[in-house]
Amino acid sequence: MTGVLHTRLCTLLGIRYPIVQTGMGWVSGARLTAATSEAGGLGILGSATMSVAELQAAIVRIKQRTDKPFGVNLRSDQPDVNTRVELMIRERVKVASFAQAPKKELIAKLKDAGIVTMPTIGARRHAEKVAEWGVDAVIAQGHEGGGHTGAVPTTLLLPQVAAAVDIPVVGAGGFSDGRGLVAALAYGASGIAMGTRFLLTRESHVPDAVKQRYLKSSVTDTVVTRAVDGYPQRVIRTDVIEKLEQSSGVVRWLRALRYALAFRAATGASFGELVKEGLSMKKSQELTWSQVAMAACAPMMTKASMVDGRAEVGILPTGQVVGLIEELPSVEELIERIMREAAATLARLADVEGKAA
Image (cartoon, rainbow, N blue to C red; front, top):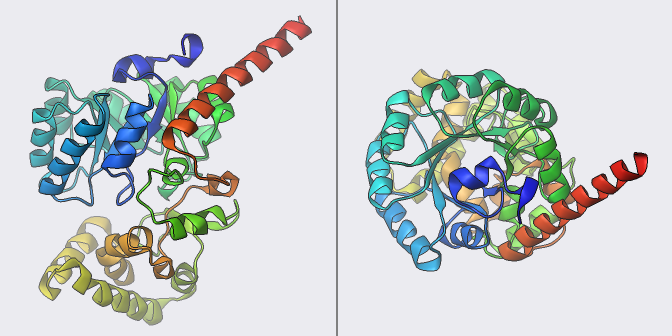
């Protein structure tokens, strides 16, 4: 696919199509990441929930499945982030993506090693700041996006960011098809990033029963809540989320503490470690005690819901676009369909313009 659909992003990343699969914790494993890259997009491994050893093993598995470029998503605040970066440098990973802006020193280290740095931002000022620090591209995620998300809708955020920075901008939040890709390009983006749409593919690690729960959701079945870990996060509206949202004060704290203690055993962490982590979160993120208790166990609750297939645990991150998705294609089928739709959309618009002239 050439012409307008081969963008600056394609050239920067060395990929065929301007489509990025986001690095979703517990979801974006080696299989999904490799399938996306092999199909012509950019697969991103969700490594924030992995140990360094697990990350290394996953990178090896990806390389066994594809020789195409791929990325690794990192948490910039992880204590061992430099160890992870050094591993990526040794393994010649193409892209480092971040849900939070990395420090300038880390960006410089990645750039010196030839690794493309691409953080996700939710506001124009954040894009301007990281561009000044030297990142190579940004993913601009609007309010419709899944998981942790900002307050500005994609249709307002994307043109703002594209006009503000002179690096490739990738639109995220609300995209699932070729029409969306063309719309993003019209707003000034160089491509689109999708999480929920890739979550609902056959290569996704999410159990089929949980995928069916997603497929049954409408565009009004999601909610943005701070009850999970203190940050705004879009999830499917479940009984657990409803109870957390409706609780207040002591009731919310007790319920959150009960969840934290129940999932402490699954993590293998000691009670002291849980308290230490909670105190650190309280200090750095200005969370309430109920948010601290939830934040300490939120990763394991998400794993139980989305990996272990225990949908009743109730933490199911998703984009609002979930309400438009009705089937589970393979990654290759999805990407090829998006590109066909994009080409057809451009042809239709050209035809309309020609008739108008």
